[in-house]
Length: 202
Length: 202
Image (cartoon, rainbow over all chains, first blue to last red; front, top):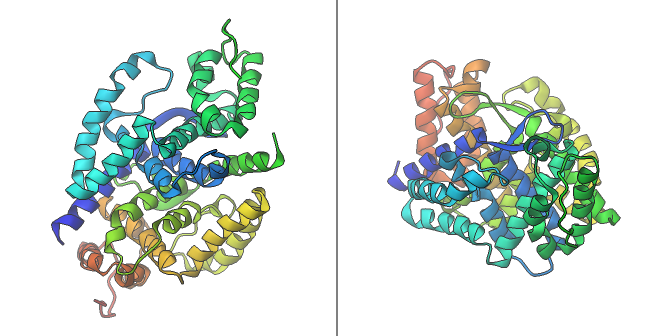
């Protein structure tokens, strides 16, 4: 077996560990927390279905590739809850160190290509990265809504925090924004999301 | 919310159930069986990494889309173990009924498009479908090898059965075939795969 193939197989077997990284979002039936590998699959499917709602042209292949690798760094860095200010402070450093190790398992040209996908996702600059990030907000929102509040219920998240977090959906897929607001307002009304005195953006 | 968006969200929430469908293949650490959603993600990643080994041109976007939906029917039909002759007899009918229900959750044009991806995968005819099917053989093989025999150990699978099942790898990615044979022969030597008197193809 040549070195290139050996490196590719080693990378793919290492990636298997993403199936053991647990997120705060539950499955829709609330039975257990979702892991980052199945979450990534669900995002790829969501991209295929929701692409028509994006107001600009996007290269769907690039979006799917970005979504597939966007959480790989969690194999080392773990999942950082989006509303955990303490751990968010160290997230960038932890994830960069993880990327240095994990993408380097691949042959250098391929490692650089996949790392560039991850960096593009993280930078939120291209139309593809903005769409991919918006999907990464939408899918947990829909799952939380199905599972009776999910990670919001357990962590005393406020309406304003969720609105800020969901903002990429408003700018990327404005068709979906009224549904996002409906979900947030319903969870405020039922007391699961903590209200606040800030005005709701629309 | 318009009907189209309502249907799309309903489909995506239904798809979440794929995370609860367990396969026979264990994770590489042997800690638990893999589910079909995380398996699908791993195949998409494997396609991105192994594409260079395919001897013909393939449309990678089509491959990724096929792999993303290839197991969706299992939400109703369950996972059918590749070496379970009894249940394989009824697999096609069970999966067709599942496809009728699940893809019909989407708006008709989109349901037809995603169903066509699934049917292309099942037909094994296009270069993209052959590559996708070869990956669906390779990834469990590598995982079984890591987990000390995995689903082969538990189900008295023979060398000849595994060789037949892996054949799409030989025709699609011949570079990888020597590694596949090494794995199979090692598991025969250790007694985990049952030997037989048929000659090994190479």
